[in-house]
Image (cartoon, rainbow, N blue to C red):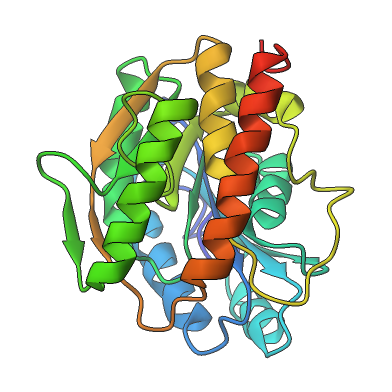
Length: 270
């Protein structure tokens, strides 16, 4: 069975699985994550293996120059529920899109490789989909949300960016950029063909970490397509080894938001 735990054997044939529960794909985009990818995969696999639904974990190696791919493949050899996809380095947006397109689960989540939002949060997100929402997004703002260890200047820059996002394209969404989101398969299939930025097939390769406003476009498309979005407060921990460059990536993000606004004004997301 595709979503089984570990290597298939007589004692691991989904004996705990509930056929009424939607199966789950978890996508982890990874660029130069050799120091923590094994630990991340162990944490995610341990959590999912204790649940009563079938699952897969997809590591999308985003052209890493360290041993991320090799380590991920070694872990995957121990668990047939883990797959590793290898791409030229095009940035997180391209990696996530590629992972979503390759996913086979009924529900599709993506999470940052540092697990800044704990994987255990997935249960709340799945409940939102069961309650009729089409996608669920993590929010580091609002009642119940918590940021841990974030430098003040990063927080100020992030809030200024979100103010612009709300004013231009996503009124009411306090945090579009949290790296933990969950979609129904139907929602993903509705959103992806309408995206205009960062195609998984024609995006230019990059030589540096590339953080973009991919999430903004994704949510704009979801709204224009009439999808129901659940906004879920999360606990989020700032990563000391974050690859975000506050100044370079802010410029990229602002450019992306204005590009999304342009497409939206022209009705390209309707």
